[in-house]
Image 1 (spheres, helix red, strand yellow):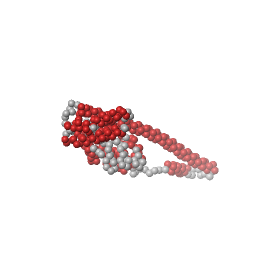
Image 2 (cartoon, rainbow, N blue to C red):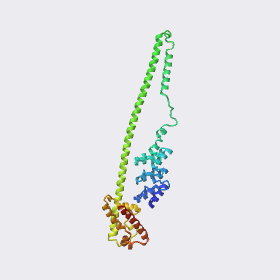
Image 3 (cartoon, rainbow, N blue to C red):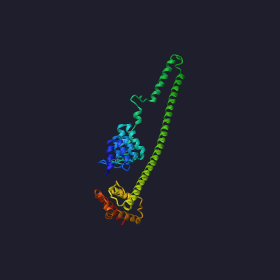
Image 4 (cartoon, rainbow, N blue to C red):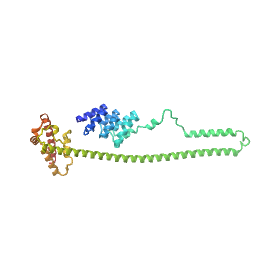
Length: 350
Protein backbone atom coordinates (compact mmCIF):
# COMPACT_ATOMS: atom_id res chain seq x y z
CA UNK A 1 0.00 0.00 0.00
CA UNK A 2 1.43 3.35 -1.03
CA UNK A 3 2.20 6.06 1.54
CA UNK A 4 0.75 9.54 1.67
CA UNK A 5 3.81 10.93 -0.10
CA UNK A 6 3.54 8.34 -2.86
CA UNK A 7 -0.12 9.25 -3.41
CA UNK A 8 0.91 12.86 -3.88
CA UNK A 9 3.68 11.85 -6.31
CA UNK A 10 1.11 9.81 -8.28
CA UNK A 11 -1.28 12.77 -8.40
CA UNK A 12 1.43 15.08 -9.76
CA UNK A 13 2.48 12.49 -12.36
CA UNK A 14 -1.06 11.87 -13.59
CA UNK A 15 -1.70 15.62 -13.78
CA UNK A 16 1.55 16.30 -15.65
CA UNK A 17 2.62 18.80 -12.96
CA UNK A 18 6.34 18.94 -13.69
CA UNK A 19 7.25 21.91 -11.48
CA UNK A 20 5.21 20.69 -8.52
CA UNK A 21 6.69 17.19 -8.74
CA UNK A 22 10.22 18.55 -9.09
CA UNK A 23 9.78 20.77 -6.01
CA UNK A 24 8.16 17.96 -4.01
CA UNK A 25 10.93 15.44 -4.79
CA UNK A 26 13.55 18.03 -3.87
CA UNK A 27 11.93 18.53 -0.45
CA UNK A 28 11.23 14.82 0.15
CA UNK A 29 14.27 12.97 -1.14
CA UNK A 30 13.39 9.85 0.87
CA UNK A 31 10.13 9.17 -0.99
CA UNK A 32 10.14 5.85 -2.83
CA UNK A 33 9.02 6.32 -6.47
CA UNK A 34 9.12 2.62 -7.41
CA UNK A 35 5.60 1.45 -6.57
CA UNK A 36 2.60 0.21 -8.55
CA UNK A 37 -1.03 1.19 -8.35
CA UNK A 38 -4.43 0.24 -9.76
CA UNK A 39 -5.74 -2.92 -11.37
CA UNK A 40 -3.07 -2.82 -14.06
CA UNK A 41 -0.33 -2.39 -11.40
CA UNK A 42 1.45 0.31 -13.34
CA UNK A 43 4.24 2.49 -11.98
CA UNK A 44 4.93 6.18 -12.50
CA UNK A 45 7.12 5.51 -15.57
CA UNK A 46 4.26 3.60 -17.19
CA UNK A 47 1.99 6.61 -16.68
CA UNK A 48 4.39 9.20 -18.16
CA UNK A 49 5.09 6.94 -21.16
CA UNK A 50 1.35 6.57 -21.74
CA UNK A 51 1.01 10.37 -21.64
CA UNK A 52 4.14 10.91 -23.76
CA UNK A 53 5.63 13.33 -21.18
CA UNK A 54 9.40 13.26 -21.73
CA UNK A 55 10.14 15.96 -19.13
CA UNK A 56 8.50 13.97 -16.32
CA UNK A 57 10.20 10.83 -17.62
CA UNK A 58 13.69 12.33 -17.31
CA UNK A 59 12.90 13.79 -13.87
CA UNK A 60 11.70 10.45 -12.48
CA UNK A 61 14.69 8.59 -13.94
CA UNK A 62 16.94 11.12 -12.21
CA UNK A 63 15.23 10.39 -8.89
CA UNK A 64 15.68 6.62 -9.10
CA UNK A 65 12.62 5.37 -10.97
CA UNK A 66 13.31 1.79 -12.13
CA UNK A 67 12.82 1.21 -15.91
CA UNK A 68 12.63 -2.55 -15.25
CA UNK A 69 9.45 -2.31 -13.13
CA UNK A 70 6.65 -4.36 -14.74
CA UNK A 71 2.88 -3.97 -14.79
CA UNK A 72 0.24 -6.72 -14.70
CA UNK A 73 1.00 -7.71 -18.30
CA UNK A 74 4.75 -7.84 -17.65
CA UNK A 75 5.32 -4.67 -19.69
CA UNK A 76 8.05 -2.25 -18.67
CA UNK A 77 7.88 1.46 -19.42
CA UNK A 78 10.02 0.81 -22.51
CA UNK A 79 7.33 -1.54 -23.90
CA UNK A 80 4.79 1.32 -23.70
CA UNK A 81 7.26 3.82 -25.16
CA UNK A 82 8.04 1.50 -28.09
CA UNK A 83 4.35 1.04 -28.88
CA UNK A 84 3.80 4.79 -28.75
CA UNK A 85 6.73 5.34 -31.12
CA UNK A 86 5.30 2.73 -33.50
CA UNK A 87 1.97 4.55 -33.47
CA UNK A 88 3.02 8.20 -33.56
CA UNK A 89 6.52 8.20 -35.07
CA UNK A 90 9.91 9.67 -34.49
CA UNK A 91 9.05 12.36 -31.93
CA UNK A 92 7.87 9.81 -29.36
CA UNK A 93 10.88 7.63 -30.18
CA UNK A 94 13.31 10.48 -29.40
CA UNK A 95 11.32 11.68 -26.34
CA UNK A 96 10.56 8.34 -24.68
CA UNK A 97 12.52 5.41 -26.11
CA UNK A 98 15.93 7.09 -26.27
CA UNK A 99 16.04 8.31 -22.59
CA UNK A 100 14.89 4.91 -21.28
CA UNK A 101 17.33 3.03 -23.51
CA UNK A 102 20.27 5.25 -22.48
CA UNK A 103 19.39 5.09 -18.76
CA UNK A 104 18.94 1.31 -18.67
CA UNK A 105 20.07 -0.46 -21.87
CA UNK A 106 19.13 -3.84 -20.39
CA UNK A 107 15.44 -2.91 -20.60
CA UNK A 108 15.58 -3.50 -24.37
CA UNK A 109 15.76 -7.26 -23.84
CA UNK A 110 13.23 -7.68 -21.00
CA UNK A 111 10.26 -9.84 -22.17
CA UNK A 112 6.68 -9.25 -21.06
CA UNK A 113 4.21 -12.00 -20.18
CA UNK A 114 3.76 -12.69 -23.91
CA UNK A 115 7.54 -13.10 -24.36
CA UNK A 116 7.91 -9.91 -26.44
CA UNK A 117 10.82 -7.54 -25.74
CA UNK A 118 10.98 -3.79 -26.52
CA UNK A 119 13.79 -4.55 -28.95
CA UNK A 120 11.45 -6.79 -30.96
CA UNK A 121 8.74 -4.11 -30.95
CA UNK A 122 11.19 -1.53 -32.25
CA UNK A 123 12.04 -3.73 -35.22
CA UNK A 124 8.88 -2.35 -36.79
CA UNK A 125 10.37 1.14 -36.97
CA UNK A 126 11.97 2.25 -40.24
CA UNK A 127 12.60 5.98 -39.94
CA UNK A 128 15.29 5.94 -42.64
CA UNK A 129 12.83 4.59 -45.17
CA UNK A 130 9.98 6.87 -44.10
CA UNK A 131 11.83 10.14 -43.83
CA UNK A 132 14.60 9.87 -46.44
CA UNK A 133 12.30 9.09 -49.37
CA UNK A 134 9.64 11.60 -50.31
CA UNK A 135 6.65 11.40 -52.59
CA UNK A 136 8.66 12.79 -55.51
CA UNK A 137 11.44 10.20 -55.30
CA UNK A 138 12.51 8.90 -58.75
CA UNK A 139 11.18 5.45 -59.74
CA UNK A 140 13.41 2.43 -59.55
CA UNK A 141 15.28 1.70 -62.75
CA UNK A 142 16.75 -1.48 -64.19
CA UNK A 143 20.54 -1.14 -64.88
CA UNK A 144 20.43 -3.93 -67.46
CA UNK A 145 17.62 -2.26 -69.38
CA UNK A 146 19.57 1.03 -69.42
CA UNK A 147 22.64 -0.77 -70.84
CA UNK A 148 20.61 -2.40 -73.62
CA UNK A 149 19.03 0.92 -74.59
CA UNK A 150 22.41 2.61 -74.68
CA UNK A 151 23.89 -0.17 -76.84
CA UNK A 152 20.96 0.04 -79.27
CA UNK A 153 21.36 3.81 -79.58
CA UNK A 154 25.06 3.50 -80.37
CA UNK A 155 24.30 0.82 -82.99
CA UNK A 156 21.76 3.10 -84.68
CA UNK A 157 24.23 6.00 -84.74
CA UNK A 158 26.93 3.88 -86.33
CA UNK A 159 24.51 2.51 -88.90
CA UNK A 160 23.43 5.93 -90.13
CA UNK A 161 27.01 7.21 -90.22
CA UNK A 162 28.20 4.36 -92.47
CA UNK A 163 25.04 3.93 -94.57
CA UNK A 164 26.05 3.63 -98.29
CA UNK A 165 29.71 4.10 -97.62
CA UNK A 166 30.66 0.46 -98.12
CA UNK A 167 27.96 -0.73 -100.53
CA UNK A 168 30.46 -2.59 -102.68
CA UNK A 169 31.82 -4.57 -99.81
CA UNK A 170 28.60 -5.11 -97.86
CA UNK A 171 27.97 -8.65 -99.12
CA UNK A 172 31.49 -9.93 -98.54
CA UNK A 173 31.59 -12.88 -96.12
CA UNK A 174 34.47 -11.52 -94.09
CA UNK A 175 32.54 -8.32 -93.33
CA UNK A 176 29.57 -10.32 -92.07
CA UNK A 177 31.86 -12.44 -89.90
CA UNK A 178 33.56 -9.32 -88.52
CA UNK A 179 30.23 -7.78 -87.50
CA UNK A 180 29.22 -11.01 -85.74
CA UNK A 181 32.52 -11.08 -83.89
CA UNK A 182 31.99 -7.48 -82.82
CA UNK A 183 28.52 -8.16 -81.39
CA UNK A 184 29.83 -11.24 -79.56
CA UNK A 185 32.60 -9.15 -78.07
CA UNK A 186 30.09 -6.54 -76.90
CA UNK A 187 27.95 -9.26 -75.32
CA UNK A 188 30.96 -10.83 -73.57
CA UNK A 189 32.07 -7.47 -72.21
CA UNK A 190 28.57 -6.74 -70.96
CA UNK A 191 28.31 -10.14 -69.24
CA UNK A 192 31.76 -9.71 -67.68
CA UNK A 193 30.72 -6.29 -66.38
CA UNK A 194 27.51 -7.69 -64.89
CA UNK A 195 29.40 -10.52 -63.20
CA UNK A 196 31.98 -8.11 -61.77
CA UNK A 197 29.20 -5.89 -60.44
CA UNK A 198 27.47 -8.89 -58.83
CA UNK A 199 30.73 -10.04 -57.21
CA UNK A 200 31.36 -6.55 -55.87
CA UNK A 201 27.83 -6.41 -54.43
CA UNK A 202 28.26 -9.79 -52.74
CA UNK A 203 31.58 -8.71 -51.29
CA UNK A 204 30.11 -5.46 -49.94
CA UNK A 205 27.14 -7.35 -48.49
CA UNK A 206 29.45 -9.79 -46.68
CA UNK A 207 31.54 -6.92 -45.36
CA UNK A 208 28.41 -5.11 -44.15
CA UNK A 209 27.11 -8.25 -42.45
CA UNK A 210 30.46 -8.82 -40.73
CA UNK A 211 30.52 -5.20 -39.57
CA UNK A 212 26.95 -5.37 -38.28
CA UNK A 213 27.71 -8.58 -36.40
CA UNK A 214 30.79 -7.00 -34.83
CA UNK A 215 28.76 -3.96 -33.80
CA UNK A 216 26.04 -6.18 -32.34
CA UNK A 217 28.58 -8.08 -30.27
CA UNK A 218 30.15 -4.85 -29.02
CA UNK A 219 26.73 -3.39 -28.20
CA UNK A 220 25.69 -6.53 -26.33
CA UNK A 221 28.90 -6.52 -24.30
CA UNK A 222 28.51 -2.82 -23.51
CA UNK A 223 24.88 -3.26 -22.47
CA UNK A 224 25.76 -6.13 -20.17
CA UNK A 225 28.56 -4.10 -18.60
CA UNK A 226 26.35 -1.06 -18.10
CA UNK A 227 23.62 -3.20 -16.56
CA UNK A 228 26.08 -4.79 -14.11
CA UNK A 229 27.37 -1.35 -13.16
CA UNK A 230 23.81 -0.08 -12.73
CA UNK A 231 22.94 -2.98 -10.40
CA UNK A 232 26.14 -2.46 -8.41
CA UNK A 233 25.41 1.25 -7.99
CA UNK A 234 21.85 0.52 -6.93
CA UNK A 235 23.04 -2.08 -4.42
CA UNK A 236 25.64 0.28 -2.96
CA UNK A 237 23.12 3.08 -2.68
CA UNK A 238 20.62 0.82 -0.94
CA UNK A 239 23.27 -0.44 1.47
CA UNK A 240 24.40 3.10 2.29
CA UNK A 241 20.80 4.17 2.90
CA UNK A 242 20.10 1.25 5.22
CA UNK A 243 23.38 1.79 7.07
CA UNK A 244 22.58 5.46 7.61
CA UNK A 245 19.06 4.61 8.86
CA UNK A 246 20.48 2.12 11.36
CA UNK A 247 23.05 4.66 12.59
CA UNK A 248 20.32 7.23 13.21
CA UNK A 249 18.20 4.54 14.88
CA UNK A 250 20.98 3.69 17.37
CA UNK A 251 21.65 7.34 18.11
CA UNK A 252 17.97 8.08 18.74
CA UNK A 253 17.60 5.03 20.96
CA UNK A 254 20.50 6.25 23.12
CA UNK A 255 19.07 9.76 23.20
CA UNK A 256 15.46 8.87 24.00
CA UNK A 257 15.91 5.83 26.24
CA UNK A 258 19.24 6.57 27.91
CA UNK A 259 19.99 10.28 27.37
CA UNK A 260 19.50 13.28 29.58
CA UNK A 261 16.29 14.19 27.74
CA UNK A 262 14.56 11.01 28.95
CA UNK A 263 12.17 13.08 31.05
CA UNK A 264 10.51 14.94 28.12
CA UNK A 265 7.05 14.29 26.70
CA UNK A 266 7.09 11.89 23.76
CA UNK A 267 4.90 12.13 20.67
CA UNK A 268 4.81 9.53 17.88
CA UNK A 269 7.63 11.23 15.95
CA UNK A 270 9.81 11.37 19.10
CA UNK A 271 9.96 7.58 19.41
CA UNK A 272 13.22 6.22 17.87
CA UNK A 273 11.53 4.09 15.22
CA UNK A 274 13.98 2.25 12.91
CA UNK A 275 12.00 3.50 9.89
CA UNK A 276 9.86 6.49 11.00
CA UNK A 277 7.71 6.54 7.87
CA UNK A 278 7.93 2.86 6.97
CA UNK A 279 6.01 -0.29 7.82
CA UNK A 280 6.89 -2.83 10.50
CA UNK A 281 8.72 -4.91 7.87
CA UNK A 282 10.78 -1.83 6.93
CA UNK A 283 11.65 -1.32 10.61
CA UNK A 284 12.80 -4.94 11.01
CA UNK A 285 14.89 -4.63 7.85
CA UNK A 286 16.72 -1.61 9.31
CA UNK A 287 17.22 -3.34 12.67
CA UNK A 288 18.72 -6.46 11.06
CA UNK A 289 20.91 -4.60 8.54
CA UNK A 290 24.53 -5.67 8.84
CA UNK A 291 23.79 -8.52 11.27
CA UNK A 292 25.41 -11.87 10.47
CA UNK A 293 22.58 -14.41 10.53
CA UNK A 294 24.93 -17.33 9.91
CA UNK A 295 26.22 -16.99 13.49
CA UNK A 296 23.09 -18.29 15.19
CA UNK A 297 24.21 -17.61 18.79
CA UNK A 298 25.21 -14.00 18.09
CA UNK A 299 22.06 -13.43 16.08
CA UNK A 300 19.88 -14.83 18.90
CA UNK A 301 21.58 -12.53 21.45
CA UNK A 302 21.05 -9.55 19.17
CA UNK A 303 17.34 -10.39 18.83
CA UNK A 304 16.99 -10.72 22.62
CA UNK A 305 18.32 -7.19 23.08
CA UNK A 306 15.89 -5.83 20.50
CA UNK A 307 13.01 -7.83 22.03
CA UNK A 308 13.78 -6.33 25.42
CA UNK A 309 13.99 -2.86 23.90
CA UNK A 310 10.57 -3.06 22.21
CA UNK A 311 8.69 -5.36 24.62
CA UNK A 312 5.33 -3.59 25.28
CA UNK A 313 5.53 -3.97 29.07
CA UNK A 314 9.13 -2.82 29.31
CA UNK A 315 8.45 0.02 26.89
CA UNK A 316 5.50 1.07 29.04
CA UNK A 317 7.71 1.04 32.17
CA UNK A 318 10.37 3.07 30.40
CA UNK A 319 8.25 5.56 28.47
CA UNK A 320 4.58 5.00 29.34
CA UNK A 321 4.31 8.00 31.65
CA UNK A 322 5.76 10.36 29.05
CA UNK A 323 3.55 9.52 26.06
CA UNK A 324 1.27 12.21 24.68
CA UNK A 325 -2.39 11.25 25.04
CA UNK A 326 -3.23 11.99 21.42
CA UNK A 327 -0.45 9.64 20.15
CA UNK A 328 -0.55 7.00 22.92
CA UNK A 329 -2.75 4.44 21.12
CA UNK A 330 -0.80 4.75 17.86
CA UNK A 331 2.56 4.39 19.64
CA UNK A 332 1.46 1.37 21.66
CA UNK A 333 0.03 -0.31 18.55
CA UNK A 334 3.27 0.13 16.59
CA UNK A 335 5.41 -1.07 19.51
CA UNK A 336 3.23 -4.18 19.87
CA UNK A 337 3.43 -4.99 16.15
CA UNK A 338 7.21 -4.53 16.11
CA UNK A 339 7.60 -6.70 19.22
CA UNK A 340 5.48 -9.48 17.71
CA UNK A 341 7.57 -9.50 14.53
CA UNK A 342 10.81 -9.72 16.56
CA UNK A 343 9.32 -12.59 18.61
CA UNK A 344 8.39 -14.40 15.39
CA UNK A 345 11.98 -14.15 14.16
CA UNK A 346 13.33 -15.41 17.46
CA UNK A 347 10.97 -18.42 17.43
CA UNK A 348 12.07 -19.32 13.88
CA UNK A 349 15.63 -19.91 15.22
CA UNK A 350 14.52 -22.71 17.56
